[in-house]
Amino acid sequence: MTDPSSAALGDTNLVGWRAVAVEMFEGACDAVMRFPVTAAALLALAINVNLLITDIKGFWAGDDDLILPLFAAASASLAASIVLEARHAAPAFRHGAALIAALAAFCIGWWDRFSAVETWSYVAALSGLMLVAPALGRRSPDAFWLFMVRFAFAVLVSVLALFLFAGGISAILASLTYLFGVEVPHRAYEHVWAATGLLAAPLFGLGRIPRKLDDEPGMDTRKFMALGMKALGDYVAAPLILVYAVVLHAYALKIVLTGDVPRGQIGWLVLAFGLSIFAALIIIHPFLRAARAPTRMFLRLWPFVLLVPLVLLAYALRLRVADYGLTPERYLLGLFGLVTAIVLLLQLPQRTRGDIRILAGLPTVALLLASFGPQGSVGASVRSQAARFERAVGAKPIDPARNGQALAALRFLEGHDAVGRVAPASVATVDANGRPKGASALYNEVADAYGLDRKAPYGPNSRYFSKTFSQPAAVPIGGYDTIVPNLHIFGKPSKETTLTLPGGKALSFALQGGYVDVTVGAETTTFKFDEAAFRELVDSQDAAPHPLELSDGRRTMLLVPEQAYGDLNPKFEPRSLTGTLLLRKAEWE
Image: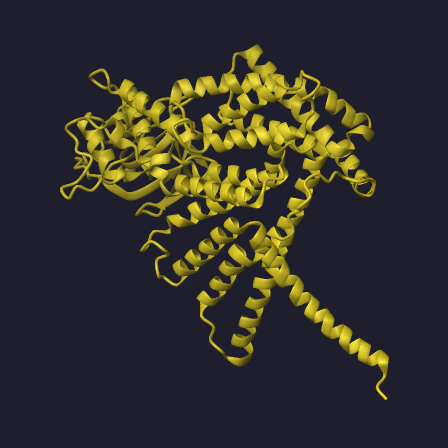
């Protein structure tokens, strides 16, 4: 007679394995049925990348630009689906809106030249939009917080699935090679990781995005996370942010008292400060009612400690834009300042005070709008730099300062394929075959058409100079009898350059304070050169160098430079010299 317990055990094992397979299949089907447009975009993205790996040149004969458009389509369609799910829209309407969002995002990413896309901000905004989508669906702040936690968990599960699945298959393939000598093509590993990372793992995560967007953290959830969140707020977030605020306010006071100009990185420091405050407020939101003294102080003070950094940011941006024009980075820093100011104003009405949906949703939507189009960071910056270029070349002759301004603006336009905006009528923007000229070729032609010196050693307001001579120079040697070619002299604390004269005496060279220190044994002598002559050499437009005479009052040397690098501000001081040195051997014996 069969043991019923063993039979039951065998049946349970069979059901268990079958349950796992059914659960995986149903999870994938659920993700596809719930987000069909997103799943289709992910499938196309995975196929395209795998075609690129096999050198079939993707869908479009060698153009891999579909990676960004397809990612954008997947992200936008998912965000649209979640927003409409939060509003309980009908499936047909939800999928239709997701398709429209996917097509719009795809077109913006595909025609990036016309839509003026800033890639990294476009990707960041679309990624953030998936996370904050319920904030646009009129969910409560607590429900929005819980969705973000669950969404972050779904992302974590996707990442773990990627490493477990792709990593496991890769380990199996590697074992076949090392244990049995089976040659596995390197591309096989790339295919595994691409297919898993772009299709299987995302579908696994999509199946774990919560359906009920109205759920709020229950008592069990609050109790489970309260201790950690309180510790994070009381011992980490609140003290560090308040100390950071003291540092920024002290720096602002220093500027007021000394009249010093804000340093170039102050904008990023203010950005990090503001984002840290927003992130802390969002993370600890459900536990604010039970907040202790440090966190309560932070909650009372955060709108006020942002005011002075915002003024500091506005002042620094005004100076930088006035000197160097608008760039996407400065545009986005200014946008952050504007968004933060709006958030602070929204703390005045009781209804919007402390609403984390605003803290998360407003910056994300603003970043998305700033990532493309004529209103975006690239479009606005291109217009600013084109105007800056036209002002710089507007008056003749073009002095070195305006030459540097024009070249800096033209380089920016070259990087964004917009040199044609400032091309004069004498410069054709297409070649003989009617195809658009490359940005580099247009850069040279436009610079030459306006008479700009493309080999200028430094630009306006530059802190450094760099000069390289492309042609040799014929120099009479006079009374010099020893030649040292290819001599490199570096500024201290770099290592000294040592050479040995024909008689055996060793000389060590180093730059110190803008002069050349020569050490012989225990004696160090300083050789000075005419600063005006050196400055004229750096400013020269000649391809061949002029020799520089160095003297310590008793001995004289002649340097024919090949390269020179150094400081312009706060004073003119060479930091590195390379060239040929002429000296008199008898003066060193």
